[in-house]
Image (cartoon, rainbow, N blue to C red):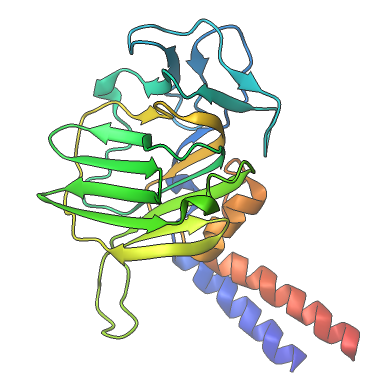
Length: 268
């Protein structure tokens, strides 16, 4: 039995390196650890920082609203619920233009706010949004159609740190038809809260990315990926943070099998 498991582990390792998205598919990472007296929000992957605004979109805040309350790193970013937001600049350097492809956005949020505000927003001729409100939702629109997945607001606006992942999987295989059936998934604390069919088409745009518009609460460890994270990958990010590279799918399974092998050896 043990020899069979070891052989299986070796096979999985080979297959894992031959398939699956890599950590290089992380497009942007905002740790929100900034605590300097300036308006720059550091982005740690593509070196495309954002600006913290308080008031009109042209009014830079000279001091980030930093909080020591956090999940990872040294802090989080606090939004006042009135006029704070983070905007990537300039618009012609849009680095999260997903088009017709898959993508994932992950973040931690701590709020009791149940009003409807766009946590993430890109808008031009086509648009896609991520909202929280009553209920919490991921809503995207493009190519003349839209799709929306929702979950109870109590899951998110609890006043505690909650991990959220919004996934657009354009290569999802329907288990019944075994055919490609694009789908949206909304995860809360590592579990699928809801999923719906995605028929939205092309989401190309050249707009700024806006984060936390009118939000009242804290946000931490934002990650943007240009592929659909699996449930195990979403949980890896939740448990380890965006800054820790996601192992290849085969490597993650190999680690699980390794634990099983150790368990079996102890039982012998």
